[in-house]
Each structure stands twice: as C-alpha cells, then as structure tokens.
Length: 193
Image 1 (cartoon, helix red, strand yellow):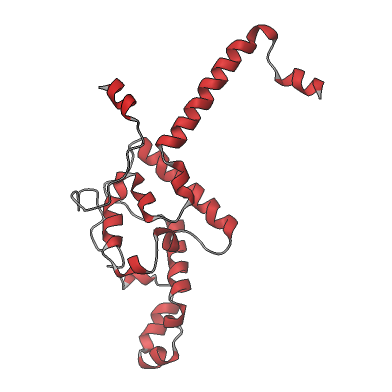
Image 2 (cartoon, helix red, strand yellow):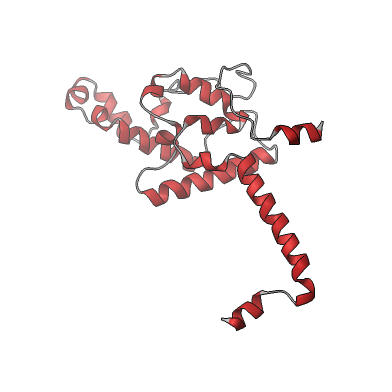
C-alpha cells in the first residue's frame, strides 16, 4: 500500500503546488457541473431540454402538442430497451449536444441524426403498437400495413407530430417557454459587470 502511495504522490517539494492545482481543477469541475445544471439530465423533465436555448422551439411545439399529456422528450428520443442503453444514449447524445452548443456550432435548422431517428421510430412503434397492429384498422386500410412494414418512417406521414414543420432557430424566437433558473450566482454577475 505504501509503495502505491509513493508512486502516486508527487515529490515532497511539489505536494503543496499539486494540492492547490488539484483543488482548483476540482472546484472548476464542480462549478461546471453546477452551472450546466448537470443533475437535471438524470431526470425525465422536459424543461431540461431548454437548458440550451436552441431547443426552445422544440420545447414550445411539444408543449402545445397532443404528446405533452403522454410523453416526455425522453419517451421519444431515448431508447427504452434496457436501463444501461437508456443512460448510455442519454450521456452520449447529451455530451454531443453540450459540445456543439458550447462551441457555438449548432446548425440553424436542427435535424435529427440517423441514430436518433432509429430510436424515435422504435419508440413510435413501442407506444403505438396496439394501433399499428389493430386488426380492424389493418382490414379497413390495406395501405396502412404496407407503409408500416416497408421501411417507411412514421413521420413521413405524420410530419407535424409533435414539433410541427418549423424547426429553425429563428422560426419561433418568441416561443413561450418556462423561465429557467439562472445558475450563475448574483455575486458572480456583479463581478463580471
């Protein structure tokens, strides 16, 4: 055990400096987790998606859709085959979103990636399985089963569900969304002024 500590610890002359640097890095990491509201990403609360304002339109359009009463963002945009895949996908997709937003590389028109589209398609089928396998519906609309099974995506017909046709950052700049709490303390805002 003492050999391991000797290998990890810096030489005695550097221990104070390393402790200060490690403390600063730890403090910065805690501050980044706090300011990014990182804990909220573990929840299913749709307000989490508007931590980044580029999702305001998506939130507002979902809020005014029929899906609001039945499904949160995660119900559609995260896989639900097992809990490990759910949180792995959330972490991977969330880090990609955070990186794009932090580097100000968000596109003017937000389009779903191929992997995300597969997840949404699977979740459409998961939630609407009774509807798409309903014998009464299948017997009255022959094309319904054809379209369902021929590799088409649900939103090829249901384009307005749930986000509507407008999907650019400037499409709804004044969309009404809940006011989010600013994580920056007042004393820091005053220092920056």
